Amino acid sequence: MSSQFPIAPRPEHDAQEQGRKLFAGNTDFLKGVVAMDGMPPADRIEVCFAGRSNVGKSTLINALTGRKALARASNTPGRTQEINFFTLQDSYYLVDLPGYGFANAPVDVVAKWQRLLKSYLSGRATLRRVFLLVDARHGPKEVDAEIMSLLDSSAVTFQVVLTKVDKLKAADQDKIIAKTREVLAKHPAAYPQIVLTSSNKAEGLDILRSIIVTLV
Ligand code: GDP
Image 1 (cartoon, helix red, strand yellow):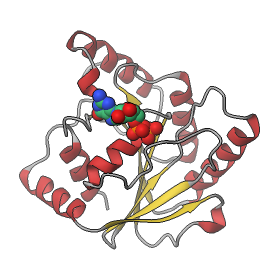
Image 2: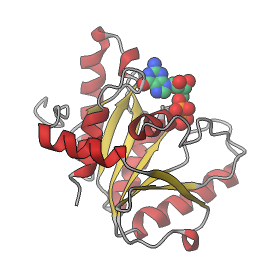
Image 3: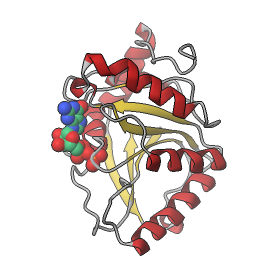
Image 4: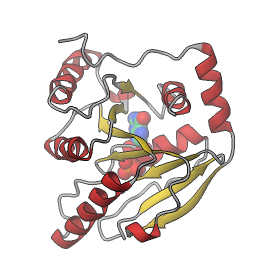
């Protein structure tokens, strides 16, 4: 049903301005966390970015914050699977989850990452929303649906962000959006709106910023 999971509209002027101001402030890398006891105190609103490796997550975080190299632009399978915390002014944590879906990641690395992810998602009371990034050229894949199910069982609201829309052929757009809606309809934790972004063309960034600034 097309009225379900509409595309997020452009923000109202005030929300856009608030979002711009929030992200124009200081953003800093705080720490990379490999275990729950390393988490910073849950003392502010937190939003998290998740997605398959190569979906454009680092590029999006950098584009949102206007920082060229805030989030590391390469994630390699051998690398420690860290949850990276960034401070956004003094009022938010932006959290960068390691990319998932490496075809050749060692089984023990995947298992360790899944355990940490589960503990994080179910144990973080201040986590307001997960932005689940999905490549607009492909739509959600099986591995994305698995994360969605994990989010359902953790009762953490997630919102799908279709990335790299500049690479999506106009003729394919309706098909990909329909496919995304079909998948989302199976997931109770899905926020009923889809965000379209292109970091390259600065598309959808103001929408995401205004969504984040209005979370309480
Ligand atoms: P990550 O592994 O999810 O952090 O992905 P990256 O941010 O490193 O991006 C993976 C690749 O996609 C890089 O080559 C980026 O330049 C490219 N990319 C990221 N965002 C966009 C976008 O909005 N449009 C296009 N065309 N390419 C993008």
